[in-house]
Image (cartoon, rainbow, N blue to C red):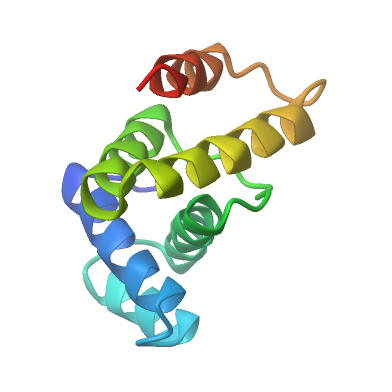
Length: 117
């Protein structure tokens, strides 16, 4: 699998926001990211994560720690504290879902750190 780059992460956030705002379809966003070199499955997972973070809902697939931190930073900067709280709720639901399947101490650390903002 190709490495997820910083540009992929930033593009995933941008596309995920557009899907969340219903400006484009998820398929359009995945196709866009695929055209930039990201695997479709990864693109779909990252977009799903952004949408879940923005809506405060649980998501199943884990994206890397750098991406999660980028998403949290951007949500706080672009949408404010209320959306950050939704994002932290979604991250906690994700971590609880992953409990017993995957050990994700870095993501717990991010959750704890951003909870103090």
